[in-house]
Image 1 (cartoon, rainbow, N blue to C red):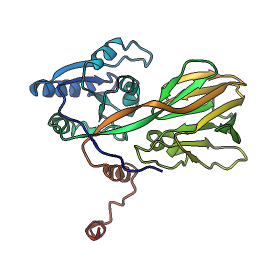
Image 2 (cartoon, one colour; image 1 turned 135 degrees about the vertical axis):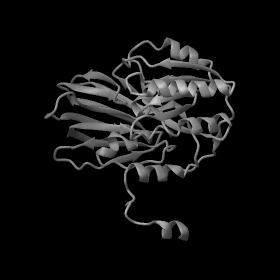
Image 3 (cartoon, rainbow, N blue to C red; image 1 turned 180 degrees about the vertical axis):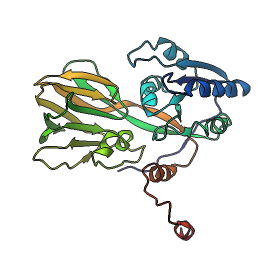
Length: 301
């Protein structure tokens, strides 16, 4: 089970790179504003638009990030997932700024960004480490996922047949829309929409669950980070392997996907205490009724 870990402070940085999605309105202008703020604080700063395609060239970003203290990502959760691969490989922390309405990975809204970034530059922030999993399709190279690994259909109206083994023990043979292996980060994504549990962000546990299984219960299973999961595609017509919803690989009958915890992580820059996660969760999932006063609850605590 998860435990609150030792809080890691993020000391005052001296250099940064700002990445933004050019497809999102206002992201470029906000990035320029944040660039000016960094420069005014005597930071060495670079600004770089992300390629339109997730498979586009990233040599410039990798080179600039390697000589920077942290990465500022302006966009949405999808943009942050895109840059997390660079950040984890180089062990550089990420400060996420969301332009949209909802986001669990980003720390700041576009309105909060200037003041929030200033706090980071002043050294008033901490690091939150998120675990990553690695997946290997047959004998191909390993790929890494911050959110989830999904085996499903590329077309609607069909199911995929997948056998699931955990630590060499066969636990299920699903015929379902998809089967998800989710990290704690991904537990507020696709897994949540399928009725899965929410894990604390720094938890290293993983979730295995089917999506709309046929003639099988849709129980989610939380497993320890030491476990290894093997997925066997028993019927693979038009089946796909999706990594973080960004990369897709075609699967055929007989394909095997091996998933386990990776020996790497992504550090996110946070301003609030660890318990701020619960407040964010309640707010973004609409758990609190706005027509009721909660003063009595907060005062009694």
